[in-house]
Image (cartoon, rainbow, N blue to C red; front, side, top):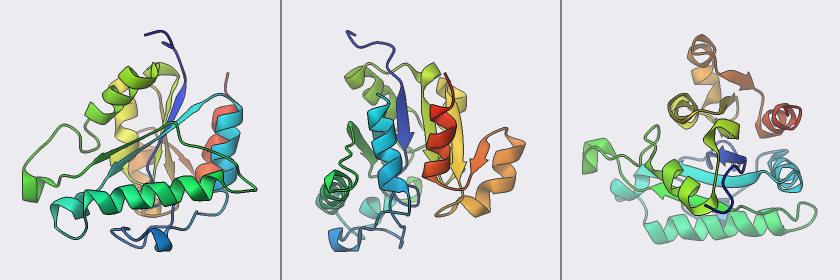
Length: 186
């Protein structure tokens, strides 16, 4: 891997970067959470790779399709690229499964397959990376793979706050607060 050792921020999408209305599948309903666009830009400017990793169980449940997921991802990219942010994602991965519908898989977070795929594709050093989301499953891979987890209190985060603290996960208000913590670290 020519780029071995790169830092990355693995971000959950819905509830962390975008407002989460539940099973988001319509691009026109994609809305950045306050401060999220600027936070992604700060990561870009600092040379930290930004990768979304998202569980999309609505696909397995028949509520929407993989094409719908990709349409929302394109809209997210447009929102981030537009002024004033002019930010970008370096990668996007998703799990279309749900254990009650499709059975167990190794790509549904906190499973690590999608993170491993990102590492192989982008030359990421997990120990120097960050796992950010509004659920314990988003930050759990930090314990398995190395790195630092941040639970954001946007989306579903409030409901996971106490357990995150018991597990030693840093709890922050939102993505912008997580990025301030990250960029303050060596």
